[in-house]
Image (cartoon, rainbow, N blue to C red; front, side, top):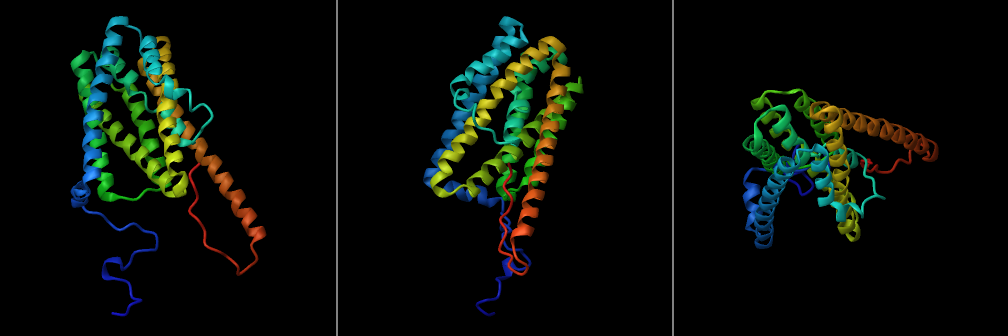
Length: 287
């Protein structure tokens, strides 16, 4: 075999295609001591955060009985972070963060007002959401890679799940939908995170990821407050269906705007590049 010949494991793969991963890779990365410590700390911290979030949401709803108060409490939880993100918009992330990630408000109201399963059922709904997120996280480690198509598809799936949750009055069906919501939400946020890190220069990567975290956590309180007020005014079912529709509409609008921008960019390129002098193209950035 010549030095220039591709290795057998890479044969048939196009340039830029990520190598397929195996499930064992998930365990292999834990051999790195610092990463194992980070992962374990995040597991403990995340578990505590979810327990606090679930308990606080139900306590506020049980004491006040008000969807609007529940939405306001969720908004105030994130108020310090909210103050830093009013000037930053990252398209799909902003749409999904605002209208698709309001589970601390949506889930307890679904449990109490639509499904009539009270606190135990609420805990099970959030557990199903967490289980779906975990499955998606492990699957993404094995599958690897990220692209705009996956981001848009998972965001659209989340919008559809919201609509179905608003329509469902059968508890087992709602449990399954919550698991799918956790799965699609993780499949959405992880590729966005990965693509931003891959596209950002090394010197700016920390700042870009700070904006990612701030925007994701900073837009959700707006949606939580809106969902709380909407649930008291129109009912939780209609509000969740409306949020799903707005999420789908926002993603569709972003696709249209991006397609127009790409068309204008291609037209300018055709006018400015002489025939036969075509350079390498960069993959378009999701905006």
